[in-house]
Length: 164
Image (cartoon, rainbow, N blue to C red; front, top):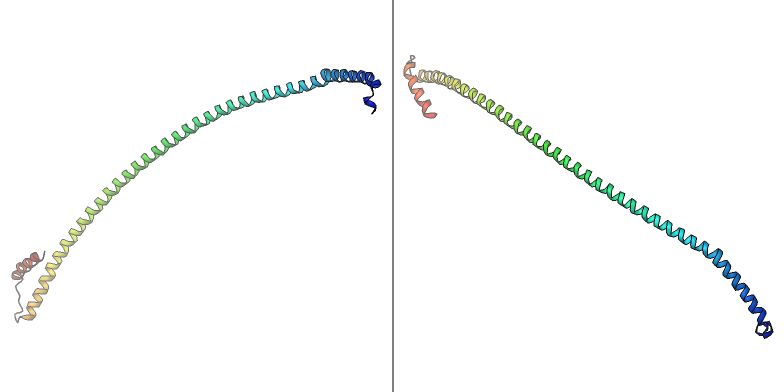
């Protein structure tokens, strides 16, 4: 094997040192600074993104708090409007019920008066009809054609009072 031959060792060591030094210089002066600048850029980008996200989170929290506050205010206003509408509606219903009761009571009283008036007129008519019928029945049953109405009136009134 030629690489293990001692006569070629000094040249191999020389080229090893040269290539190592060139590689070291390339890595330390060109490649590593580029890599470190990329890493620092990424770190800076990450820090900026974290700061931006924290700012956005804070703004979002503020907006959420304002939203909740506005939501509560709106709900309170809606409740107060609903309650006031309920109260006004209940008042109107109560007023309408009272008016309806008064109207019904007035109509009931009016109808009762009409019924009583018609009842009285019917009773008067019944008295006359009863008197006439009784007179006719007595005429037909008796041979006497003259029936005294004055005698029949107290009897009919007495019988009608007993029925009532």
